Image 1 (cartoon, rainbow, N blue to C red):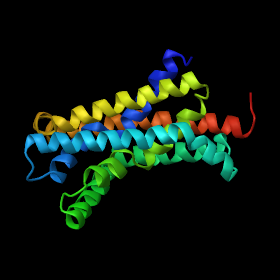
Image 2 (image 1 turned 135 degrees about the horizontal axis):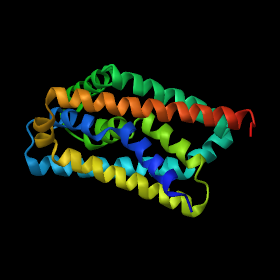
Image 3 (image 1 turned 45 degrees about the vertical axis):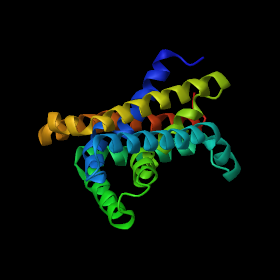
Image 4 (image 1 turned 60 degrees about the horizontal axis):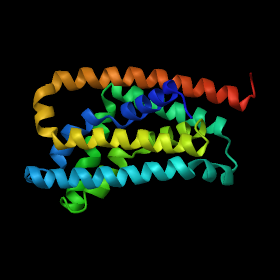
Length: 210
């Protein structure tokens, strides 16, 4: 059974990677013209789809890496660097601009149809960063019980995502532009520290250091 510290670290890593508060204002723009009930339906469907995507990578991501001949240590280093880049974007407000561009493209092409799948579930919720973090975490949680706990952590995170999206209009008004900027930067610093730890752990595993 995974320790409480390991589960807390897994929860924190996924939480700052998915960034529910950062998704809320984008979700508002994505569902423009919808009423509150329709927004909740889109939020629920998108969260459920994202959960299954991340759960699949938690269960089978390591096996796919093995088939490709990629070690967990090497993937931890690569994933850590990717997470660090996401953290850099969060601190310097580049990630929000990229997400907004993704949202604009989706509105033009699909005009709200199937937005729960794209771009809400993928790539806004279960994006490359969240997928990388999930595979990295699964590498250190290898027993059946550990994987079950990881899936529980993923479910808890996606419940928070759904809650943030369901109250996105109120959350956006409450935070304001200044509150969103402060929160995003704070989460970015935390993610950068976690990413650095992934790189250190990956280097130790790759080099078989004690």
